[in-house]
Length: 415
Length: 184
Image (cartoon, rainbow over all chains, first blue to last red; front, side):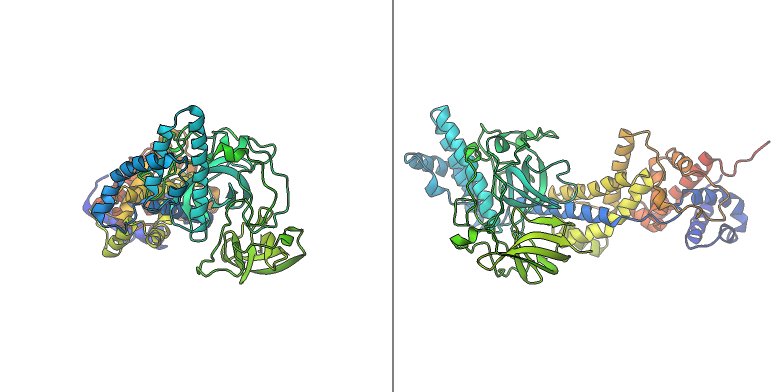
């Protein structure tokens, strides 16, 4: 068949006519001299055309969008942020950090503690110095026992840092290791920290399993996971006695570092990147947005085995020794009426007084949900049904606590 | 070579900064196109789902590593999608499933069509075309693009896209045996 410009143009014109709804004969009638050549090609074109336009499943698009934006947030947070210092000073600080660290370690290790220098958090300018000091301390540790003790201390410090930046809603990337304590749709609790796990991530992971989470801290205090995978170190879930089931009455998030009684740490389901996971015998590594690593998914930290060996504390109010409270702000950034920082009176740790039920629209999520203006605390006992999200209409069953606040027993999405 | 219009240039510039709003717009604008393209090429919804999602994650990586698209965003995205389709067939060369049944209403084939071929036959025939020929048909018939839009997605001139479309349909006609003279 000849391939003339007129035939090529005529074919495209006929295809457009068919697309617009014209019949084959009507399309061919526009080019009677070329009809014999065009006909079989148009027939082939009709065979190649789907009978109906291809539909795009909304669920697929939404899931992809969530993964896309979550990943973007992690990458954004991993980019160096502008420093407040003048550029030459900021640039010179990194090499200077090591020198400062050596001097500081020399001074501080004499007292056996780094507490005075341990106030910086991921995202702080001095955080690099803090980490460098720890490296120097480890290298100066004389015997294996002392080194192990230091490693445990630093591992616990890493987890405390994650809790602190979550409390502050600091938009940094974090990575930590812990046990999956709750799975309510995309709302998980890992090591006592609220984690949003977008669809497609975390498949195959179950409650009680030790995992490594890398993600970005959100404005509402949750950690939006960019990566969550099984942790095969065994440190997190092997040494902690199971916590007895109990009704959580406090305003703190679920107890940390606990696991389900019969669910030991699971073997990793996928190979881990060696540069992103540390073993308990190595220096724990937590990278923040201001850290030296350009990696978009920062390495995991290794929670302190010492911490995991500590028997779970009995339920206590926020003033107890449990994890730091997770303070949640609604999206409007105005404090909710009942924030978790309020410390319940001692008598409030008894059983709840009344159960209440109401309906409303989810206005904010996190450690405390706001539902049509009503603040409800999420506890380890809260049951989610139907994967409620922001904007959904839900039915809430909650306990009225002694201090007047509400602790959610169930939040159910309404059809 | 098509270039991005000013709006897309602005969107791309914002995307380079990983601006959430710009990225959201890009996803909203292009995901359906990429999904339809991938489904047309592979015939499997789960594969189309994977490919479309992966295309956008690769876009993020490119933006983050400052390897942002230099021509048109659409062209870049379809280029990645095309590579992923090739990878898919390389790993699963026997895959030649038809479009999901849900995508094709039974009995809705045009009355003018003289050929009622099974979808598998058409798909098998399509796989005998060159990569570019398959791409132009996927864009024209899977996405419903005009030849101008297909040209943009493929990084070609409109005339080149028209010629490619002609050769693709001629090749498909030949493989399907449409219009062959019978001497029975």
